[in-house]
Image (cartoon, rainbow, N blue to C red; front, side, top):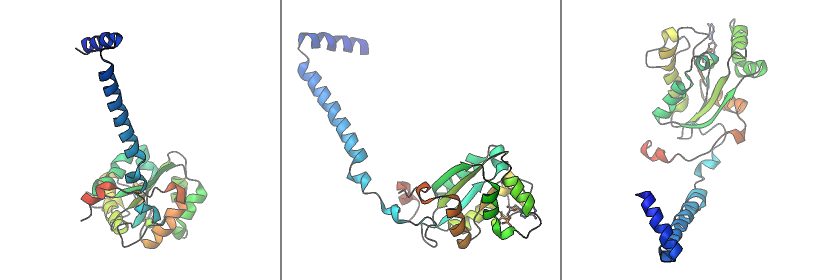
Length: 214
Ligand code: DAT
Ligand code: MG
């Protein structure tokens, strides 16, 4: 049928009879394209910049609270990146930064600086910066994310983490506990800028928020 239509149109075009129809169709197509372009680059998009003013570390206590998370090498190796990050998306949270990193020893030492005196510090740094697998660092934004993020993760030892939590669902070893999450407002405020520069953070408006926040 399409071929027949094409043939008819071509034959008619050759005779000049379909000029007006062709012009009309062309004009309609051009109009649609112009509309699409104006929607894409027009005011409704360019003025959507309310999120632009959120500071890198977020605004604790508001819907723009932010926390830092990292899928650890064990979970990257086991193919759990999407499983872990998907839980935050499903919960309704907004991901505002994400990258895969093979962290240096220096970066890991700075990240775990408060644990320097602990007996497991050396092993922890060696493991996290071994290079045998990267980590996936990401920043999540949303109401209560610092505490809720920790609740979603579970406690430090996966064996003691409740089923339903990330650690409680994915691991059995304390040193291979799938994910890191900032433990408080201060932790988030230091970890987010340690891992991400300002231009690596996407201050975007999530239109689905109107179905998430009442
Ligand atoms: P969390 O990651 O729950 O905030 P933390 O900050 O006390 O726990 O420790 C950082 C990481 O160090 C933890 O995720 C896994 C490792 N770790 C903690 N306690 C440990 C222990 N007793 N033995 C081995 N590794 C440990
Ligand atoms: Mg911690």
